[in-house]
Image 1: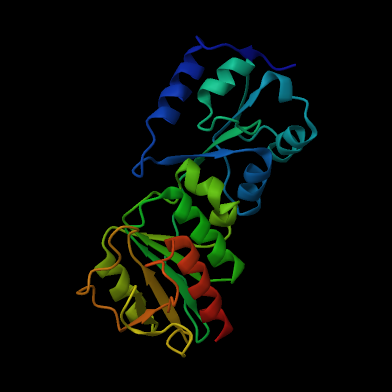
Image 2 (image 1 turned 60 degrees about the vertical axis):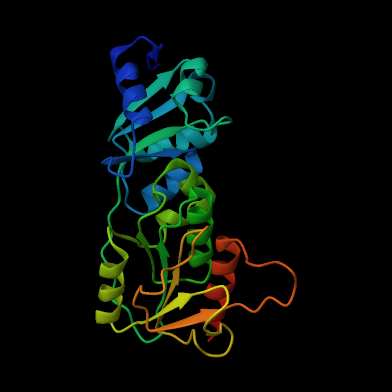
Length: 256
């Protein structure tokens, strides 16, 4: 039987501080739920600490993760109300894991490469959904320059685990990201609401990197892409949600 910790235990106080102060500069991320933690283990990401609520300590999915870790990291069982205060979501899954922040270089990109580039996409739900779409088309990488942290709790949850399966490459500046992609032999296509070539007219033929801009402003015209594409909208709406647009573009790129 493991000890069950309360809110005042020094280690729990420390974990609450660590989890509450995370940012895009944090060296650790928080994963929620046995399924997500299991996918992290499959991808080679080993937690440094795992926290579970007392009433779920004997749950089959929780025990399975415990067996896989086999004492290789700190395992803490806490009172249910303590777990609820630690968890980042309102209805948390019965496991939290602290994992060192993953870092991926740009992988080798071949003739069929498809890369998604997010330039200042600010909503973490959109970021996670786009990473999930990239996973669905077997994209080679998702490049993130500014915007929401792809390793934030909401982005991870919205990605449904895809953030652990697709290489996430982070750049501090979109210009550096575009330069790296062009050096890798990939054509860089920017997206625009009104201008550019029709997205389904061959402009997204691989190897290609699709660049999406921020939700309210899109991409700066001087960003330095190789060409532009757009999605024709004969209806009365002016634009699509960035996650919806990005999904459509990714499937077109993979089709070509």
